Image (cartoon, rainbow, N blue to C red; front, side, top):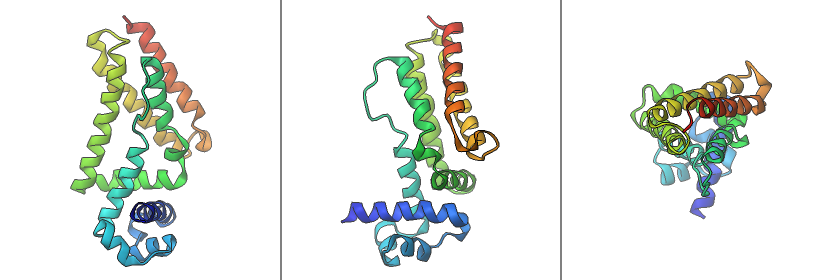
Length: 186
């Protein structure tokens, strides 16, 4: 039952944070939404902070590459698509990401998670770019692509463009990758 209950609590946390933000989110609201006692949160996560970190781990785990993709361009495409997936673009996830980024500026545990996420994205991109670009272009290409993904995700999530539809952002990121490969490819 533990994995099922943890999942219920994480999903409830995403929903509550989407509705009331981090500061309005309480253990009581989360437990009511999950249909579980508030004591179970303390039992599994320690406190609200532990549950927030577990929720972020959940969102970060959804970004992992879980299948083998040998073609480097297909692998980069997968990374791009995964960052703009329905999981990452759902209003509950976007509101949680916004809160996470703001909180990570002042919270050591969340800051560490943000650094891990950032480094993992760049490492995964660099892994594929090494097979496509000249060595001196790899680091910059990975950093620029990661920034482009984050920037487009932010713009489209906030609704300033796209109204929640990420298809144009995905297409622009993929085009950027193809332009890099055409310009700096081996």
